[in-house]
Image (cartoon, rainbow, N blue to C red; front, side, top):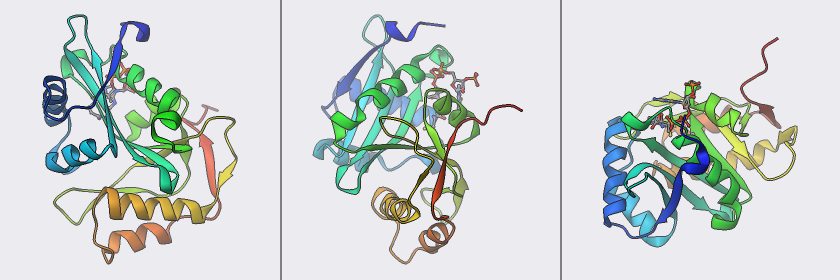
Length: 213
Ligand SMILES: CC(C)(COP(=O)(O)OP(=O)(O)OC[C@H]1O[C@@H](n2cnc3c(N)ncnc32)[C@H](O)[C@@H]1OP(=O)(O)O)[C@@H](O)C(=O)NCCC(=O)NCCS
């Protein structure tokens, strides 16, 4: 595996630059349509600074992977919205390096005390190994272009020790913001009420993946 220290990670702030376009090409390749937010929205958010895009660069400066961070400091969180690595470079430590860098810097780069990420089983295990914790609440991700959702894990991290729980009221506010602002769901979309009703109070914060007995 390529050592993480050999991966160069740089912020890409110019929408439409060659590095931006290379990252978008990976985005199109590795994420299915239902998971991809409209590129015009990505670009708008990057222009306002609400989205931070980081690229992992290979030896010749080519973009091999990227990570986007949605900064919502007023709501107290930053959400990793997409991490993607070129298929021929997957499994070589690039996604881990991008994610580690986000965990190290998110509080300073976004002003938010919590880092969140939504993930299916395999990616959740990766993020858990890197130090994210699982918020033990049912969670589903709205699918773009449909009224369906896909169950996922919601993982979280804040600098310091893992707290045993977080307040259910706090998580409800965060998820409502993710759904309404991040996914642009209408306020009366039934997925919002269903999700909020399922959040326990308080919400256990678990080490992830769970240790084998
Ligand atoms: C998930 C992903 C970003 C990981 O980057 P990577 O550079 O391949 O990962 P690393 O080499 O640092 O670490 C390997 C681990 O990544 C995870 N991983 C690898 N390929 C994966 C894939 N296609 N989907 C999900 N997780 C994957 C696994 O946990 C793997 O460890 P394992 O083989 O022991 O299960 C990358 O595989 C990818 O772009 N996948 C497609 C897009 C995606 O699912 N993104 C995550 C959701 S935002």
